[in-house]
Image (cartoon, rainbow, N blue to C red; front, side, top):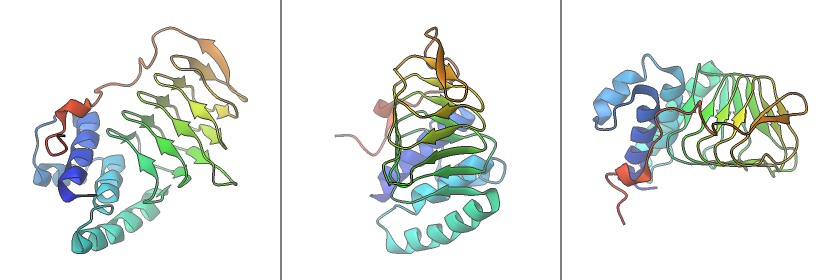
Length: 192
């Protein structure tokens, strides 16, 4: 991924945390001191840049910070714009997972698979604390997953689910807990 594209991803993550979309790289770097989830994502995004030197240095920071925060996300995981890892870790995401734009992930969340076919998560999804998403399920856009839920089958777009195993509890206000949504039209460097 080009360096400027990496900056768009970092800006989108920063916006989800701070609400400011026009900010320079130094200010975002300063924010990593205070925001644990953003600190991890900052170095995670840079580790995927095509600049060998920047990518190499970023991989070191991304692994050290991930180890300290107990966040495990492989560099090959497909993650959209505006990911928000609230309250740091621990968080474990299988490399085969696909995560859309504007997804909130809270502490003690696992998106796993033993067969390397993890979940596909849509846009504007809220994943509460202590959630376990198991194997090849599809989570639709605007879904809210309550704390402590275990997801073992597909979740329809615009629903709120909770429980073990998770059951639909509401169809009202899809994605209501996802604030500061990043819009891809705001990308400075990725214009086509």
